[in-house]
Image 1 (cartoon, chains in turn orange, red):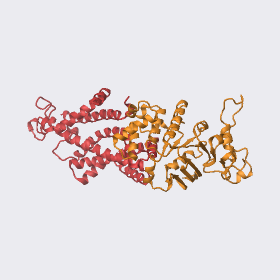
Image 2 (cartoon, rainbow over the protein chains, first blue to last red; image 1 turned 30 degrees about the vertical axis):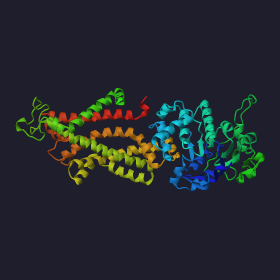
Image 3 (tube, one colour; image 1 turned 90 degrees about the vertical axis):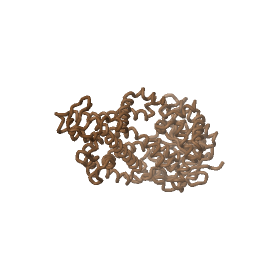
Length: 321
Length: 277
């Protein structure tokens, strides 16, 4: 299948008092229709900034997308003017956020907010828009959708609000849904429900999903492919199963090594990654991971490794492995 | 209708406030019918008459019936109070919304202007404006409304600054909503609570500012009565000999402010769906 979303060479920087912060550097990836791509990495590695760059929601100034293209079904989003971009948001590419508790306007009913979004993009009557809102709430498996549509956000639980957000994001059947840590603020049982829901809707509507998460368990469950980010760069990419079975980059090896498992040797310590993510305003000259890497050699500290094809069909940016 | 009954039971104080306001507004509208005498007819024999069966709340120095003057005075006082508060709060809220939401150089300029205006007392500002516009009812309302703008603008701006950072504003952008629409539909309604509190608090001070302006001859011109002028004209001279000249206009002003506060508090709660369960 052809890629619906093609990102190449995306670079986003922030001009701050402390200098230029490179939040996203030369990131490229593509997503096919109906596919789930996970973007994983620690906090501060540029996952959310990548997502916001795709939506062109980077606060400008101080942020700025300095180069790259984001092609959605052939149209370069970065080349559009703001009015055309606004038409794309919601109808072609939509995003759901981490914090469902505050992502809905407390003064409007949930149904009204979804209907507003529908009538924003489609020339339909108020009644049709309301009917669509109820229909979408039904789609995201909210019980008694007619009644719930007339309720206010505070009358709903966190999981239900996140589902309402998903309903809103998908109401106009966008080609790409970006889910930025959609389950982080929810408790575990609800997490599974919401992930299942996103997955079902993806199959049903053929929406491509970009799932941003730091939870590798979530990735293993839902993603077809994944990319690993570190300090604003993509360091590894491949099919989820292959990457889990055979990680190339020491960073992914470290991440996988730090997950507790059932059946591991009793009393065995988890292997954590020493140190923390370097400040994006003050990156080392070579590989950003080198200071924390126990496999690092001289070259690692001198030059940034390029992404190269590695064994079993995935790519990684590492001098050593 | 059912909703009114429902909220009426929940907020009895709000109902009392609404009744007070309605009674005053009706009195003002039907002043000609309700007032027992002409408010401008003098009667030398009734000068400073104490409250009696003829003059229910007494008569002033010129023998004009106090009750009739108060009833007619409510027209001017309420027009000034409501008019100035609505115009001042409305413009202030819009300015604050634009200032807080747009930010940047617009915000900078608006805020510096607000500071300059705030450094002058309300009365002095109103004085300068009426002096340049000339005394009339409309000019009085304008003169009192303009100094209110910076206070409201600053409070609303501060509120908008915090609202702007909330997730649902970003979420609204993420579904393709335009800036103007987000500001008006998603940000502005959330600033109503502080706006209502502020507006009801200002209602009283506008009545008193009008009184001061009238006292200085810059408000609504003589001989039309207003509560503020009735109060300020007689306060110094007659508080001992004819206290009813002071007590009743003062009472009317307090009652309107009190009613507006009660009503405003209830209104703020009713408009917030989170309080509705």
